[in-house]
Image (cartoon, rainbow, N blue to C red; front, side, top):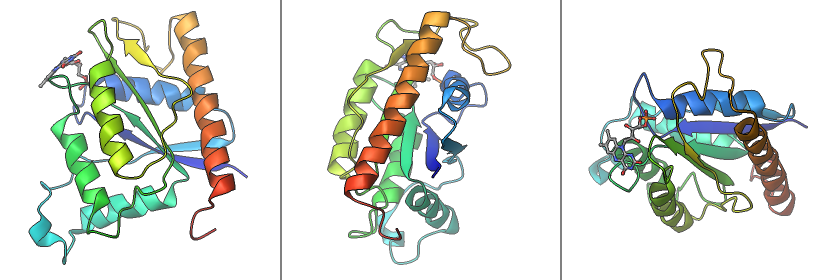
Length: 190
Ligand code: FNR
């Protein structure tokens, strides 16, 4: 059967290079992976005072995460860590205590930056966060993409052939990983 991937972009910028990368990755995904964006820009700042009365945007975020077979996070690095908007979404998704939507959800992490280390430090922080959220992480391939002008064209194609092949391999690895995790532990709703 086709598997579904919820794609979360860690940047809410309209001109985000990570969103460009995310759209290109969706295009490179194997045919049996159905990828769609999960948006995080409508969320208030997380506040545990609201755990008993979750806002609809946060409930919708959790519903979309639960429904997806796997999650792909495509994120910039801000100040050598994860963007606040992304951390905020993760905090909403992980609560109330005992109702963590990310638990056992297979996750791939990738990102791009104009800087030479291509989000490596931010991704490392994100791995720590996602591990605590009990999300199995796809570690088979790491991808730190240095963004250069024109790397993704206006039709969401990667213009550098070697990078394109590498990113297609990344998406195949994510596909295999999600399949393996769900074979061992199916989602509660089947
Ligand atoms: C950055 N940038 C950045 N780049 C990097 O490689 N490491 C870093 O720690 C940071 N820190 C950082 C903090 C803040 C607040 C901003 C706004 C930017 C630069 C960043 O990679 C660049 O702006 C990207 O374009 C951000 O990705 P999106 O939002 O375009 O996807």
